[in-house]
Image 1 (cartoon, rainbow, N blue to C red):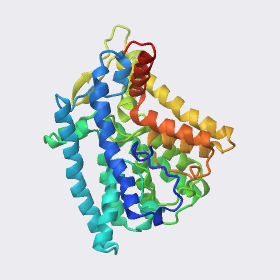
Image 2 (image 1 turned 90 degrees about the vertical axis):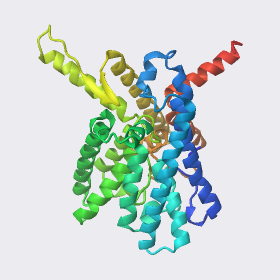
Image 3 (image 1 turned 45 degrees about the vertical axis):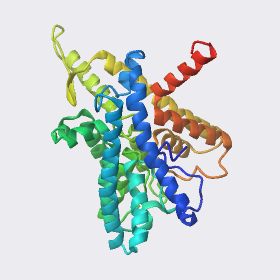
Image 4 (image 1 turned 90 degrees about the horizontal axis):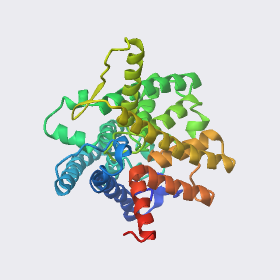
Length: 390
């Protein structure tokens, strides 16, 4: 489930000594699940948009990539395979420069690409990206993770040569702003704890983890336990927030999604302007997503509703962790990582984890990856079968 849902959490203690075939299959599950889930949510469940009303708008999936399912599927897989060739090649070269032999570098490069682009977070080695001790590998992974956090609708616009969409799109603006704010807060938190004595190293570690968390990838350059033992309180809190926010709607990333965050912020801005302007003033707020759109109350209400459902999902798993005696910081971190497909871990997920927590995390993986509209549609279908209406 963690592989196909592109979560990245694992119960395997010793990944280093897994058979290469098993390790490769773990990463292929992410690659298949990443594109597969996107195809499901952008096509099959999109047909229910007229029947489930404003909640569907809250999912941020009203944009169609191409007019029909077949062309959409072809485009998504074309993007994935082209990026796979480019990304794997660049990672192979970076790993060669780090001292790996050509066949081993190719194997690790392919696995790393699938983990990064499909925001899955599985790693070939137990120490994740820290195993390579290579700035070049980290620099190549950063744009791959970012591309994985972009929606395929945005990729389509970029493939058409519409570069201005990167600057104008509400989701790219939201992600850029939140990344900058959270990165700044993380530097403050890490600086206060004195974890790193070298400012460049602190910036490198902080930025890599912010991007990894924000895109819900889950690759790491330090052991996860250090988040709670050496990183203080503020920096781990930023990681949880970044995972909770997630990437773009219609991407392989999980989380609340930048579309909803952006719409809610736009709604707040509009309401503040209404208060400050004369009563008879007509306040119109717009946003850009492929085209310029006028913000409606329905969209803001839908985004806020889905946001509340996400918070319930995050805190629900955290409360169960508290019930089993884990600290709030650990419980909320793991719950958010499971539900948002964030994948980073502080070590709570392990083979001897209490089975109710394992079941809960699996349920969070399913709900968080398919998202609420898909789950509502599934339960509605099952209920119709029980009532004999199907």
